[in-house]
Image 1 (cartoon, one colour):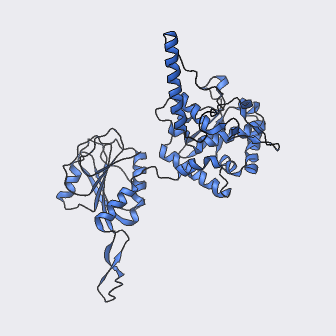
Image 2: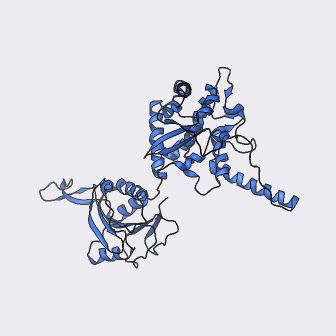
Image 3: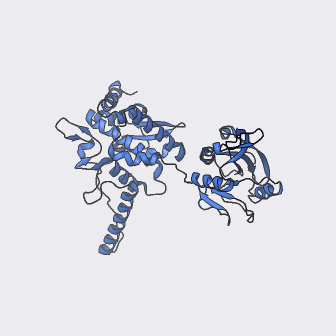
Length: 400
């Protein structure tokens, strides 16, 4: 059972943040703080770490003895450190990089330079109190101070390779790079315990940051503005492609009796409407290789142009699985059918054979399939797998 004094110290640190740096404070108060023995680590490595679980809960796991040995001011800085990792999305950007060097690069970004720390409790004298007596990972003096984590990671990789070559030339044996010195403030291995997709994690972080910025009247730290700006950019870059297809292929307008004609006010003359002026076929590969996360991301983009288009949904694996009108929000109750083999030539042929070709046809697939021959119709293929086969006609876009 966790000592109440441990909880009280954590709460005091968060309250102090709320008072002195409310932007950090609001985020800290929206996180779940959970004590844990962290038994997957050696005793000396049991500290604190963050993860995103249960569909969007940002959870900070801490080892009580680690909190107990921290002063309140050090703990104040450690909480800032965890928040910075979350806002910078470090836990979902590691991909296939070396975890050890990514961890060092991530801490460089978070901690800043030793002579200009990004985290720490500021005393009235101006002195910054940082964790572990300042013996932590800092950005080297001869490196730029405002680069990305990827930049620092690449320099660490290059530095390690050069050191290994030097050791090999001197001794005739391959040596081990020592890397940059400094203690890690927290545990990064817990990042892999997040059980949400990268897109879900980004949205959770974006919402948390937006709320903190609103409640603290926009007092976000200057060094985090670039990271916050990136959160607000769409993950997928193909919404503009869909819009351009829609505008180009139907003139971005339609005639309807529901709008009066401004030039001729006589009865029976159609007016012009820009609402749902396009007709779009959305083709979903239901063979079993498209996951719920990909569907969610895909339909988020489709619905962004839903007010300008009438959408029909065609489900197909190795055969027809359904064709119906799609309304915004339907993806939440979408029951993906099929789950057999994959034939992505057939749905295009089916649309052509049944005179159902629309202003643009948008297909979601992983690319493990065949495609129809060029039908000379507007076509966008959205691939979920960068290694998947691409059609030799139309426009192909890779889903990140």
